[in-house]
Each structure stands twice: as C-alpha cells, then as structure tokens.
Image (cartoon, rainbow, N blue to C red; front, side, top):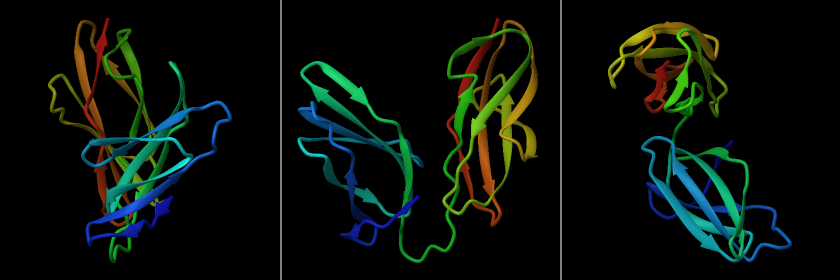
Length: 183
C-alpha cells in the first residue's frame, strides 16, 4: 500500500494511523518501524487514531497494542510506503525472514531458507541469497525467483544469511542479517 501523508516539509509528512477501536481498551500504543534503517517510533493514544510525523519516500511497518490495566493485545503488522516527491517506482520492501528464525537451532544436513518479499509496484524480479559463516556473508545464490532455497549445512556451525530483493527496474532492498546454529 502506498500512503500520501500531509506534507509538512519536503522530507517529512504527517501520517494518520487509524484502527478499529476496542470496546474494552483504555489506551493504545502505535509502533512504527522504518524498514530502511530499522528505527522505531512508538506513540500513545487514548483514541483510535493518531498522527505521526514520518520521513517521506520511505517504507514502514506498523502495529497497535491495546491496553486495559496490565492486559494487552497486539494487532497484526501492516506495511506501507509513505510517498515522496516525484518517485515513479519504489524499491521493494526488505524481505521478511521466515525460517530459520533469528538464533534458531537446526539439524545438520539440508535447511530450507524461507522469506517473504513484497513491493508497492508488484514488480519483484528476483532475490540474491547471501549465506556464510561470518557476519558479513558472501553471495550464495543470485537471481533466485522463488522465496525459498534449500542449502546444505554443517553440524556445529553458526551461519549468517540475508536476502537482497531486486525489482524489475533495478531497485533493491536488503533484509537484516540473520543467524542460525546447526546442531
């Protein structure tokens, strides 16, 4: 989803977040994460909407936590792109790493790396998979068109991996670096 906030400067806009109110919630906290640099914002509200100033031309993820006393409930997470000036194409969202999860332990032999890609323009062309035993892994497989890859792993080793998502016009985004341990 592409969002157009109310521009306040050439680089920032106010985005209005709205959600379905809970009949029992006393307050809400909105969590917004910049998917480019990983920074997060959290703001409290006593209503079912709030305006938050965000960078333009930037992808974000957000969710809401409703609260009543010490009881909380968390919504699903949504992604959007806060539009900026004069952009005709958008970089894909950084891939979401599904498995193995960060710091997971897996059995030796073969492991299936799984991720989910998404793009406002719906033009993801392929993924580059980086995998290795140091925290800055080398490319393992280029131009993968599926969102999963089977890899051979060695017992007693910690592996690091990341995904670079590429779209049809050459825009890219990089997931964070994840690790898993092979038993």
